[in-house]
Image (tube, rainbow over all chains, first blue to last red; front, side, top):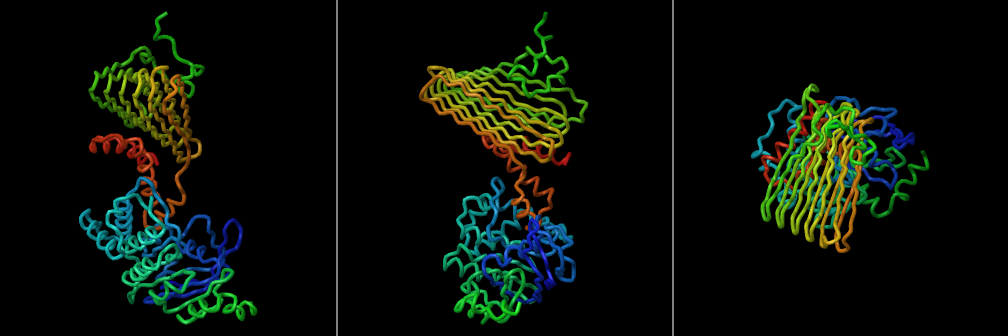
Length: 253
Length: 252
């Protein structure tokens, strides 16, 4: 579903991704872990197409099409969702207006009929309930005045409404308390666990993975994948730390 | 020599950023008078929608007196192709309120401006002015706002807020707040800022599927919204906003 091959990317001339290769087939949740500065967020932004992140080498194929050739909003319409580590505040634009415009833009790009106001409202309320987000918050401006946890929940409500085929979630668990972590984790399962969907889950901690239960876990270090394994790799990392687990790989690098 | 023949020059403070050379014989001495009796409430709007460029310049000068405890709400959108200026001189009596929301929007090589002089002549009056300017091309938006608080006008509460949004290099805005305060127990707030579209917000919106044009439209709408917050009539507010957004959509 997502095939990243030998990806090199830089910001302001500084190389961050350095030959990253990774394949996520449909039906799989693939967790990416790694120390600070490894390039995790850069990977997310490159996949999303953020301006300023320049791909110098390599390719990314998404459902057989060249992802890097598309504009950010085209990637979204093609079914890619980028969950932000720091969701952006947009004063003056309500969640409902923002998400309805977003969803209908995507539908239009895919040649589908737009949802009416009533249909959209029902969908939005359903997804807010799934993530236990007070539906009144949908009327408020996008992320303005939301706590860190509320922003992450709202991010998952957005994902539920947009119903993407593939989600790249950048530290969706940061800033969440234990209860919220469970709600968000179960939300990810409910929205994205399907044979025709996939998830790239970027995280620092094992805790979210206890709820979401990844199929594969990879360690990202210095801009490349240094080790891939099953869910047990995350447990090993949690117990022994990056240095111990990565030592044999980095020694050979 | 008749007064009307004397064209203003940029040496005059109130015309400093104007396009005085574009004036086409407008009656400079003609003032519209709005007198609001004590306790009354008046709302006026001025909308100069986009023309095709053949429309002449527009100069509007309003002299407003707001009686004791009365309220005056003025809302204006200057989306003209040619030079447009709304000048307001307002005098507030005891406990009166003046609300002003203004929008300038447009490109070309055109100046669109608000010039206000707010005279707090008696105690306990309040005024609130919010201007938002969105420009591109070589368009210019100005807000020159004078606030005079006379010696006896204690408990005056006056606020002025300006923000400019420049969508292209070459556009500009000028904000000149001027406060003359002769009373000692007053609140006068003023703020001015100029910026561009928030790139982070634009990427966030793109990541959710909004085209760059739609993202810009939503951000501009949100930006301009502040100027019309005080307009309680939903239909009127939407009408004014539509004039401004149509202008953006038509030229960008």
